[in-house]
Image 1 (cartoon, protein in one colour):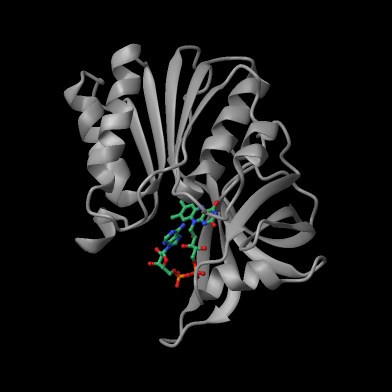
Image 2 (image 1 turned 60 degrees about the horizontal axis):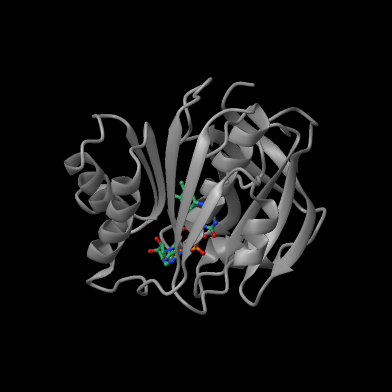
Length: 244
Ligand SMILES: Cc1cc2nc3c(=O)[nH]c(=O)nc-3n(C[C@H](O)[C@H](O)[C@H](O)COP(=O)(O)OP(=O)(O)OC[C@H]3O[C@@H](n4cnc5c(N)ncnc54)[C@H](O)[C@@H]3O)c2cc1C
């Protein structure tokens, strides 16, 4: 299936904790999305922003790419943010538009080595998509490290464990520093460094806080990760955007 826009329907929704929602979404025309685990779609929420632009927001699939007709996303309500509030409140059966799939955060087809997946915060969605898809393809050995602050009400550790294939080794740093804390990048680099020192990885895929995952890439490079073997998807605090 080629990338492009399509009309989608909210097929199912359920609350997750206090401030997030799990949505099952399908194309109205019944076509397959054609995504790989780790990729995302951009949903046009239909909200017009003060400057006149439409609020279009990215969400990573947390379901396996073995199922292409209906996908699952989880959306955290971020303050009064227009996109996340629409998707937390929208009725089942409602229709919107999306485009995609997008993104290069994915294991190469046929990858059979060892991979480290690092997620901070909401980046756990992409990590679940990668891990579940790799398991469905029957390849790759994965270690997943999730850095999340205490009391974060996005998805629970139980939610993640219930969906993770048994072969994936999950480590949860559930006492991680809050978003914006100045020591967040250094703490993350130390945790990832410990992981990588224990066993080398053929690939690393990182999703979540841009202030954290770019320094992680530098740390892995300093530990010998080959050029191009560390892939990033910044969900927020994207340093590349700030410099534009
Ligand atoms: C590739 C990609 C994949 C994404 N996947 C998901 C996903 O699976 N689930 C999900 O809930 N969100 C995901 N996001 C974030 C999402 O696109 C929106 O930024 C988020 O829903 C807030 O949108 P908003 O319109 O409500 O608020 P906005 O007004 O757009 O956002 C308010 C501010 O909050 C920041 N922000 C966004 N997320 C967080 C967070 N978790 N913690 C702290 N600050 C944050 C934004 O960057 C912005 O500065 C993803 C983003 C990208 C780029």
